[in-house]
Length: 65
Picture (cartoon, rainbow, N blue to C red):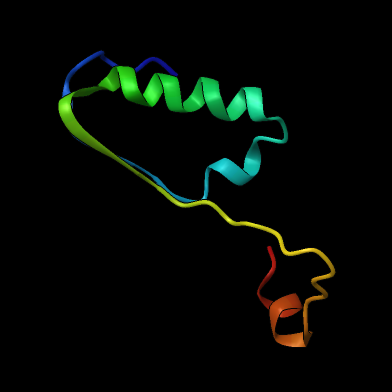
């Protein structure tokens, strides 16, 4: 996807980072997002962190896609 550079004041990327299995892909994505945002602009993104030993309960399993 091509995004115009230095055009936006705000870029939002939710539920996206979990689709990238490798840190290099995340760096590339965030670099491209940075290129799209004006100097002084903002990038808002969500990230999920894993906790060692976590086992989802039944409610969590029902909400998985």
